[in-house]
Picture 1 (cartoon, rainbow, N blue to C red):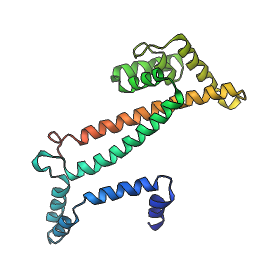
Picture 2: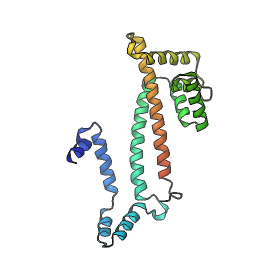
Picture 3: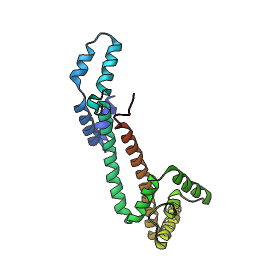
Picture 4: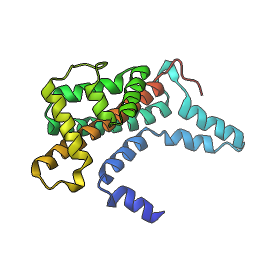
Length: 203
């Protein structure tokens, strides 16, 4: 346990962020109330008391559990925003980034149709997304050609020694990473919206 705590809070690259998050969560916990609950001899009453502390929504506000989970998810969203901004700068084409974002935010039926096209044509999902007419903005011929060239370079990355092909492969890899980050960002945002539903949330 000591080794695990050491690695989580000291040894890892993101240890400072995890420690800062733990301190923020620690500041929200009402330890005095919890101490008073622990004085109750009946175990069932202790459990009920803890549930009241963490799940109660006084004056129709968010519960303590919602606040803790919301804080953790917001920290994750902020990390995704920074990573996405860095990748968008590397890609250097706002239209491509916007089209990928539109795919992630599209209705499930649209996403399924594009995935089906990718499988049917035996191409990467990213290529199917960027050439799709279901999503805006519409790309120019030069942009589509650049995507296909980058896709070819990416699929043959291990065999490529040409610098231009290497750059094209890295460009395509950055777009794929951007798709993954947008998807994770959407999932966290959806989870956050569920957690913050005060009136409709039931445990």
